[in-house]
Image (cartoon, rainbow, N blue to C red; front, top):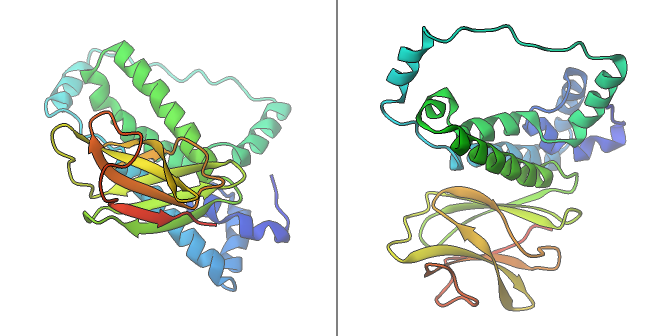
Length: 250
């Protein structure tokens, strides 16, 4: 799907995630030379995408490689069964490409979540199906926010040194929170997220270590996002000083 020149300011996320076709990318490269706002926004999206993929990564089991190598010789490879696409199917796919999950981020996060073939060897089929469904749900939710034309990003640092990023879409009324270098909460404790509405903090979910989550609740009329350390299971209201109170991007 092509865009007019007036749409250039909405393509920063797609550019950073490698979702533009060559002609569009060349045009946006030229646009970046004259637009400081888009250069900054594209840079923020690139950094956020890298942190989102890294935040959900899982190291494969130590013995997984040996199991995979032992099994390779006994597995007969088959050619892929790819039906020929009709002209109408190709047209539909072209339209969906620009409106759906940015492919670069989807591939990065999915690979990080599933851990590749090594992890596949170490888990049962049902475990994989459940994890794949969860990975897809996470990808859909995160990518919907990142790919929104009105997506905005803000970065912060929590009192415990964690690096944080929030990406919001007012149109989607959703926000994505990412944390890096988040220390372990300790036994019987958990990190809880909050949305500030007119001075009142409302629960907005939890984050476990370095990770990425879509905030629950409505960020559309919230002024800030907060992070606190709470008893396991969470609290209806913050029980201690916040580790982070970061204004939401507008």
